[in-house]
Length: 148
Image 1: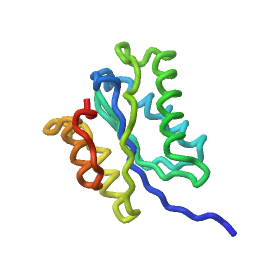
Image 2: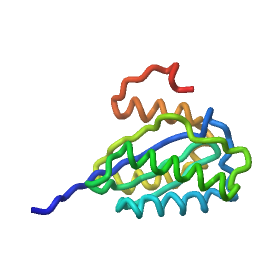
Image 3: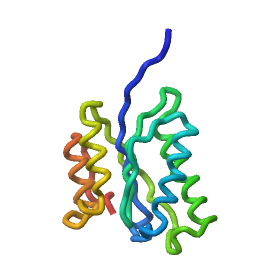
């Protein structure tokens, strides 16, 4: 029997201490690199975007890939890539932890548009405000003292 899945995730993580280091001029290069990581893991990327202090990735996970190992691979390899290529001069690392939220395939287009419009969205809302909203929307309990 074949394995069939449809697991649509929005993965969100920030730069260390939410430092505004991801300058616009090299973000596309970073996004292409992360797309390659996802492709190598047989995951389908629907959209990636971000601003100076965090990223959003909308992807389908291949059944052979665990979420935690995927995020670890993305963060470790992209951090090395950023440093080797000197993409973002002040980048030190990614934050510990991440947010991962599942969505129905029916919400895919809305989610893609949301991620696509990150720059506009963050003209009126901080990353912390957005992140708390996502946690509430998905019914995730959290302690605000851990949301640096």
